[in-house]
Length: 255
Ligand SMILES: Nc1ncnc2c1ncn2[C@@H]1O[C@H](COP(=O)(O)OP(=O)(O)OP(=O)(O)O)[C@@H](O)[C@H]1O
Image 1 (cartoon, protein in one colour):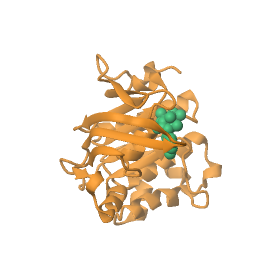
Image 2 (cartoon, rainbow, N blue to C red; image 1 turned 60 degrees about the vertical axis):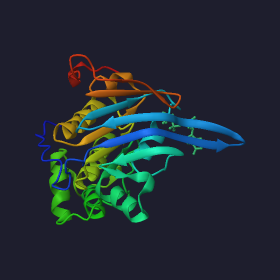
Image 3 (tube, protein in one colour; image 1 turned 30 degrees about the vertical axis):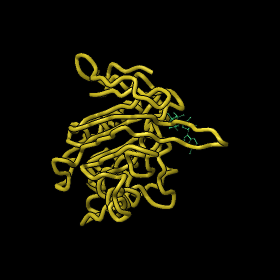
């Protein structure tokens, strides 16, 4: 990353208690009724993540990855089953509790970065801190931007940044919330290999610093660097494994 020294921690603020990074899905189904038929985007999914971890959800197109991420991020509700996030049951949570979860517990990073085009990099990052209600949001934003190696780019707008830089700003915006759970939907999908590896390095460092990081991808190579790999096929978890010998070094990746 341009030789910039990156200091990633502390990544989790004091709000992340013992339950802070827990995910629990029990018998979760998400079915869609379309034109008289039913699409079982997720069917009887059970998943428990009880430690801060770098989890990759791997599956082909249409296997249910985005559906799963939307449910875990409290952006969608299951047709049946229960989901607990940081100890809070989403399926019975009040609207106020759901808003709080979205602001203070979980953060998203998307394939297409989704930066606000009219805001500078620093303002985009500050938005994350503001939404989470953090004190000294501007100072937090400046620190986090520095952590992702973009301290010099704070006044730049999205169109003045490379794709990899935009994704680092998007990750900084998610980190500026201080939220303990980070969800990333194909975060390297629009990036070249070298830049993609830098983004994975950044995300893995967050897990090492105490967050739960869930990355969804169709790219099997990416799953090699995870501490845990959940494989989805046609809405079912068909494998849940920890790579033998631990996660592969990022230098071993090729795609
Ligand atoms: N709102 C919806 N209405 C109807 N069907 C849906 C809806 N959302 C998703 N689906 C269907 O559910 C299945 C899973 O979709 P999902 O987007 O979760 O897959 P995915 O693994 O993320 O795919 P991709 O890698 O292509 O993004 C697909 O068959 C999709 O067509």
